[in-house]
Amino acid sequence: MSSDPASAPPLSAAWFVWGLGALFYLMAMFHRVAPAVMTEALMREFHLGGGALGGLAAFYFYAYVAMQVPTGVLTDTLGPRRLLGVGAAVAVMGTLLFALAPTFLWAAVGRLLIGGSVAVAFVSLLKLATHWFPPRFYSMVSGMAVLCGIGGAVFAGTPLRLLMDRFGWRSVLLIVAAATLAVGAAIWVWVRDFPHEKGFSDRVPHLPNRTRVSLKSIAGGIREVYRYRNTVLLMAIPGAMTGSMLTFAGLWGVPYLSTHHGLTAARAALVTSAMMVSLALGSPLVGWLSDRMGRRKPLFIIGCALTLAGWFTAFFIPRIPLAVMVAVLLLTAFASSSMIVTFSIAKESVPQRLSGTISGVANMGVMSGPMLLQPAVGWMLDRKWQGQMADGVRLYDMAAYQAGFGLMLAWLTLAVVLLLFVRETYCRQLMEQDQR
Image (tube, rainbow, N blue to C red; front, side):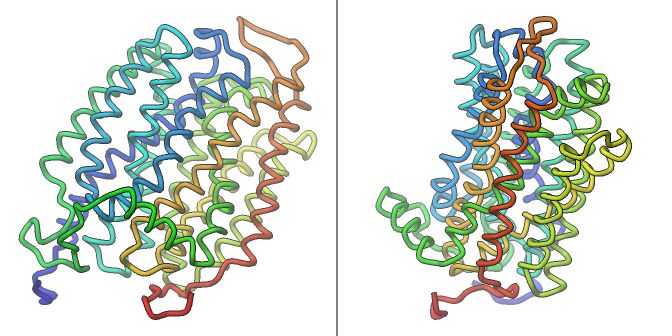
């Protein structure tokens, strides 16, 4: 392999290859938060209560989380191109099934297929970033991945609501399926795992036997990453932040803002979309600041504490003016972006050869938040429901929402405490010979 820096891939080539994968992640984020503006339609269509709706939305996360560790190992063995290509094909099938579902069961199966297929996107992006970009770009590119994904989340806000009002939710999802098919085809044609496959020199060594994958190799990789201290902590901490964001902005925020703050569904969707944009803008900034500081923990701790304070203010301070509450929600979303350093800490806490596996394990922890909190908040809302309904949709009072959102605050409090025990990596990659 050539070590000549002049033969390394130019950033334009790196961004092109990585960007095609990022388009698929954009689709993943669309599906992740789309139920936020579909709540009334889905509850009416399938005759759902809060708990059942939370369960339907969470089917995406059940499959997504279950796929994270296998995805991490498979990116180390099969490579990101194959995972992204196959994932896009399965996502098309899941989207079609969800769009055409006659019953709750078929809709749930569609969400399950979508979640399992798009689960490969983010970890594959991290692997492509490792292969195609200089190491100093890693944290910033991780933040850019979130920024790109938020594009999908924004489209799943007000634009989706307006399209639903005109064409219906099923027709919009059929269009999304066609777009996903086009993205998958582009990935298969142009994305490559390593720069040498496009005539450049590799930035990191590639393993000739990376196609050799077995249950034994998968289990071995998983066992090995759990020998490192930060792995277990990173399974529990970031889920509190993503879970809170996606439980509110991705499911319950629109009905909450509509019922208790007088916003129309479209305006409420605009607020939740703006929150996702705030999260997106913060992610690359936090990554860049962390790289500049040479430390990971301080920004993570500050962001987690501010997230906790922000949600408490928005839900439990009485008679807060709407404008102030919206500002608090936007700042809370921005503070939540500090969870992006999870992936830098995870990558730097294990040897380079395990980067895909640890990314999958860490992302499993990240996405366990919405997987658990979305149905849990829905369950709590149903427990506190006073029997009110409008147009076939359940209405929940403020006490019910406070009880449900209180689950978010409890997890965030635990996350702040656990962060104190995370080992600082000082932005340095752990070597094989380093002490575990």
